[in-house]
Image (tube, rainbow, N blue to C red; front, side):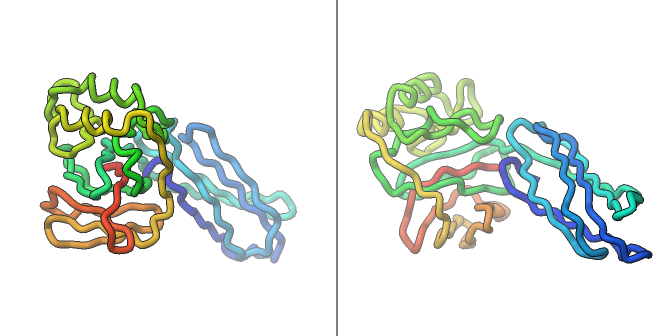
Length: 245
């Protein structure tokens, strides 16, 4: 399971021997905020669903979802349990409006398109916002300013995997933090813009030849051997904020 993604869990009890009304109790342990819920009374055998999100405050590892049934006379069923494993993202990249990305050397297997942009004014907006992931510190805020300059300045001169490396500082995606990245910020310093969250029409083409559309949550499995890809929306190249898992 992935952080910051809604999952639907459905349960269904076998028919109550007496045909009584029933309700379900759910307890999810390990979430940043423990989740407990009791449904309305329903006819025996009626399935019920819950939507749960594993939040940035949750740590990687196994978590437990427990469900049990109560009938209208207070009789309780045995508890059913489901163990889920949650993982955190490895890193993030936000590059240019030409939609080009490389696959980080961290060997990710999945990427997620978080948001898109076709506004040149926000090329270089790499930080200042609130990240929805604890393992991804830098998040765009819609403004190109001194925060972005500092981010690149701290990583300046580093190469991928080296000291002070930061993927979000690699604005011009070449696995090196250098003057190209500072120029990208300088060209737009003081400018602002908004991002696109509607992923309709998005397709990702990998250098291995596959073109894949994200699922409803924005996820795409990275083909084996892929080292780069481009993002398009309705056939046109577009900038994006991408998380790698």
